[in-house]
Length: 193
Image (cartoon, rainbow, N blue to C red; front, side, top):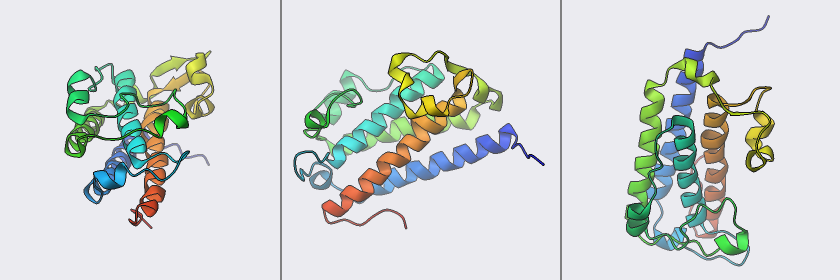
């Protein structure tokens, strides 16, 4: 017998998982300082600053695509946070992004809380019927065709649920894993067991 979870149950699980993942980022920020996130280990090893900004900014951008709301990041946030490279780095090389640094760590925390809070507030009111809405129909454009979400997409393309799971939730866990590993390089422990 096949059991299909109803959309309310699925959405409730997604909301709880998103909050839990965001709490890991909050704990990581609270237990690190600029000296940790901006630490340069060696060529070819991205600093924690990269993973933090890349993921937060990509959630900001992904949320805008999913929800239709504008991206939060812009000149005002850049002036406050003072990222060394004003780019999430998705289309850049490791050699370029190894130089990423966060200038104002407290302001970065404010930006991250704004991005995460907006996503969680939107999810709290999301109609479960929206989960099946197709965001990126097939054939998938070249910028998406070689991504993880393209492997997950069904016959119609990438749905809201696919995007939330791949672009925000799973992407966030991937970068949290990088952050946990990198914390060891700067003398800090992991976040979970």
